[in-house]
Image 1: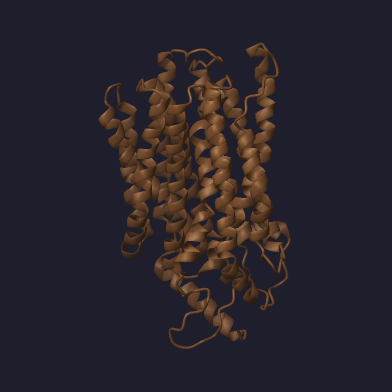
Image 2: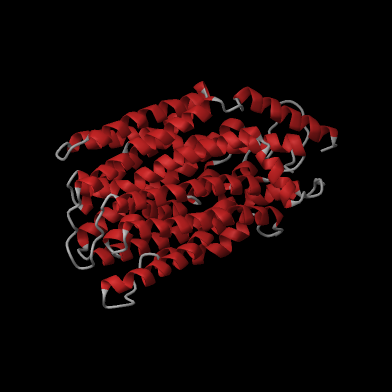
Length: 483
């Protein structure tokens, strides 16, 4: 349990005082590596499987679905293990990041190799399928090992309601900045290297190195703050740890938590479906080239980056709900516009991309600013802090939804008659049915997801006033216990 030293007046404790710039920058850097690798995978992996490795769209969607399901399964396991980890030198979360960073970067790179198991392209499909399934499972496991402990550190760094929004603004500045950097790298590499397979190998290698370095920046940059928190936490005798089944019961009886995971699920389902289909939309529907794909995605991500601090400042005045509503409404308008775009309407395409970026920014910022509040509510109700299990199950359900979404996109493309590429040959001309399937995936499907997220946000129960009441009751409890 987190420890607030008793005191009078307005004296700040280590957990509630304003974080210095150095700590915020270091914490933000922890999301740079996962963001770069995840961004490249989200935007390009399905496209890479079909247009470089030559795997049918349905099988390609299956690879991604298997990886995401496994990724979701291991999240709560790692979350609980980090809650139980004991290290005087590194605390509960940092050892996982420290030892997982190198294999995380290495297995990410291996996803972008195209092994030749057979000279016959048709005989190569199933060996490639199983290669990418195995590498994907291992890669996703190490992604969880470094990323889940990272996300669970937010409530350990600060308990202040608005400071958490600020901290997440730094986090997602690095996250979206990493996404933009990866797209700029793709733009440069794709323009300099003509061979499709070599393009992705070089891009993956550069991103893997950046990921490794940024993770170590985070680990050593927040270590002192985390260890100070841990030193105070272990001084307080916590109630006995509950069995796993009982923890599940408590987690899913937390009404506010159910709203947060629902909001996050629908927001990110919209993000991921749109991101995975954009390369197909740009190349096939708008009749542009591969090198134009990063430009469109940069328009989205750059706007999202610029809006992070705007939305963060606005949320302090009008609240998280209103900010989320504003961003999502703009994104819904953009999704409708993309569905009706025709080849040649390039200016409109970029305008819609910028408008979508306003909404994507709130999808990054708002749900992750809500989850620490839920953890405090759980502490008030149970007397325990279980950041790991809450973050683990939040990501678990989100990834199950994403697995289904990616599987749906891949199989929709295949059933619509989408033609995968053959190595060494030009991209095939797609039938009208496949083009219509791409348009549906870029417009109506994300719109439905975003509307569902808006409904859940409207009924989300924790307001600024309710959070202040929770913190006051927690403080009273700690003072009663003699802290």
